[in-house]
Picture 1 (tube, rainbow, N blue to C red):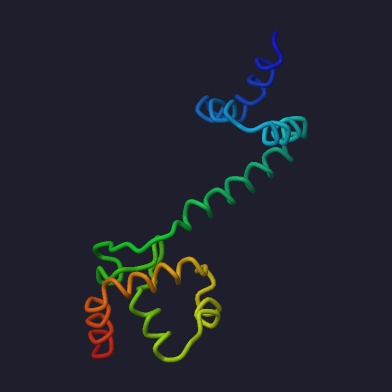
Picture 2 (cartoon, rainbow, N blue to C red):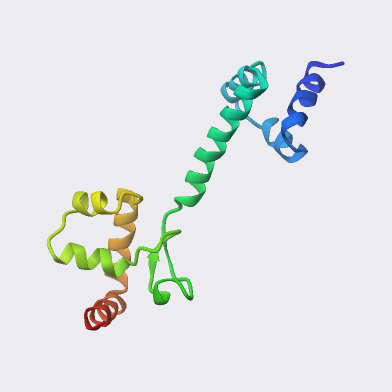
Length: 138
């Protein structure tokens, strides 16, 4: 039996065929790493795979941008995949907080998220002003 078929048999014990198809398209470095994982005992494989899935989920969850979602924060524009309204970040900045201080207060955000928020504020000034006023009155 060809080596790839043997490897595929081992992979299929833990992964569906769709993942195997992805594995075939990996770089040489990733394939080497995968071979090392495959040669590890199954409990180690499971732990490594849990870790890789965790890392992947963090990448997917931390997409950049601003989004409005009906029913989330009153439909106000928020940093993508969060419940952090852009107006609240702008208000913090107006109150004198530096980007570094804002990032300390919102540890799930990255500098890129703030840059995106500031761009949004510049291009949607009246919308952000209105949201700040509404929330000051509340």
